[in-house]
Amino acid sequence: MTGFRTLLYKEVLRFWKVGFQTIAAPVLTALLYLLIFGHVLEDRVQINGLNYTAFLIPGLVMMSVLQNAFANSSSSLIQAKVTGSIVFVLLPPISYVEFFMAYVVAAVLRGMMVGLGVLAATFWFVPMEFVAPGWIVLFALVAGGVMGGLGMVAGIWADKFDQLAAFQNFLIMPLTMLSGVFYSIGSLPAFWQQVSHFNPVFYLIDGFRYGFFGVSDVSPGKSLIVSSLFLLVIALATLALLRKGYKLRY
Image (cartoon, rainbow, N blue to C red; front, side, top):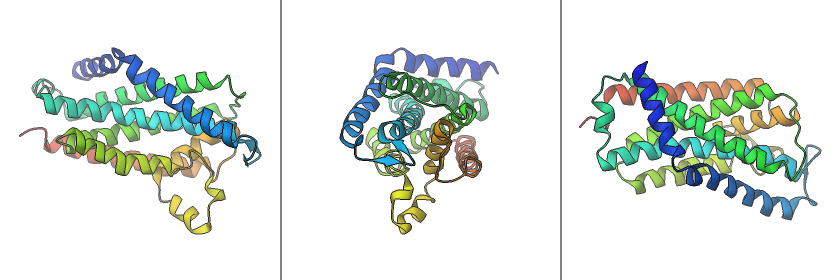
């Protein structure tokens, strides 16, 4: 596992060296969302008996985990491909499983750091409950793994930064924004409630929020099953791309 440890160290060091950009900036972005939406809707909206700010915080924490896990693995791969430094990762005898695990674990670590930063910063706004902390940790880890894997797929597929931006803007952003971060799907018309159930990110958000309040739109067990299957599909697809050397070994 020497290759895994070395590559993981490289990936963690890569985002830690610019922590102001990779960790502090996303925390500030989440706080701005909270200040704007919480200020406007706090006295007007209650969801499942919760005031809107309390409802919003878990969604913002999970959104931060998702977006930063994706950004970590995808940006690392596309930068290595564009600069040509990817060859220094491919030449050593590192198995594709070690390659996959190093990038995904680093993505999970960055996502968790940002998520913890957002959660710590929001303690000033409303006292938070932790009804089932095990579910919180479990869904955060699965979410980081899912987006770390998707980030690898995007980084492998993309040849240029604008292609990676298109992947994020037209796939990751809609999946995240339409997953219930800012609202409960119970407030939607019946048709759009059914559509939301086809969004795998919805189950990550819903299960994560259950860990805080014990309230969710679907059972946490069902959310965990769907999320785990989605993680398995992404992992198998990524491993298949790495095994084939798609767009990595020319």
